[in-house]
Image (tube, rainbow over all chains, first blue to last red; front, side):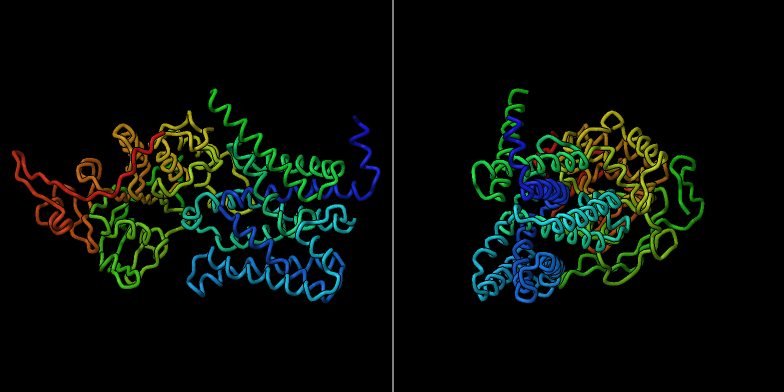
Length: 278
Length: 275
């Protein structure tokens, strides 16, 4: 039995993948609590997709250097997230409509750019669906450092972020710097997405941002407990998913997301049963 | 200058009004929501703002709170051009709050202190004490650790009154706080308002029940885009003023002990929101 758990760890790529799954789960789940509570899921998904042209341009300029691609992805995410407000203001459109138009176009641009590169099929699938077993040691360091910065920002501004999320009107009457905190949340979301893309890819990022906090919401009633529970659930899903992917030979990103969804379904069923019996 | 709710009950013994509104006009695109409103509101008074739907009650409250840009005119707060930080509390309509949000009652009340605590600081013992005291004042001490969704409608509304107390606000603005509440819950709110009166808080409440406005408030403001009257209810509720405010929606009947008014002013009350 113990053999089953330790055998995969003989491979360094599995060790790195495991650490990546834990770190990414932690950071994305905590940031995801804001995504769920603020109703930013659609924005999060769109942002993840708009990173593609950034990665494509980075690839055309710097080649397959993962460190450089990380910065290109982060830059694209930040530019996209800050331009949403500008687009919806300029066109007087509903924000979700603006997101739909701009970011579908960005994603198409990314696909177009990548398709100009010969032999790109493998790389594109890594961008779309992640490649957690290809994570290098320097990738891990980047994830750890950026994740730590995001978590530190949340710890420092916890009470202000809570007010702005729960009651923007109170934030305005207390004259909190609302725009600064809105930017901060967008920036943290961009970082979380870029970090997540390394493990689960563009297409599945939304799931690891949203599913663990949504699961935690069933049984937590305070924001900090929701964050802790979501982080633990996400890390559990990361580890279980990675082992499942090893033994069942399925794509790791998909295995992590499906595990997370399974946990969600179990917790939902559990809370449903408890409510009926209680 | 700050007023501590713990030590000094705010006795502003000057004649400077809490609010001095001069020629206030608010326009949304073509339509004028408020037109040339001028009024002085004395510190410590409790004012009911009444008027038909679309009279500009919410607009007035939001303009005072700084949430709604003013087209022209001015609002002075205790003589100053701008309200001191943290002195205004605005209680949203109950429907605008996400009651499933993972916060406890005391979390929400503590939010009122966030501006005073300041960036990068944690709540002190003093802050927690004020939260505790505010909850006692509105009769919610036993519910401090409840998630806000697990409260009745009246209790939910009182959480926001406690938050205004903890904030040490000098001016409390409430937009239809009684909508969707049953009578016992409404009475609880009025008892909580009495607690704020003891702290010397000036209160402006948009209301649609004229009887409650007359019974519980020092003065009433009759509003229909322009200010029709601002006086104690006995003086303000004259036939001429009521007709000017409500126009055709109002039916006046002479009854034994005075004037009976049947107003059709309602605001789509929700099916009772109590849990």
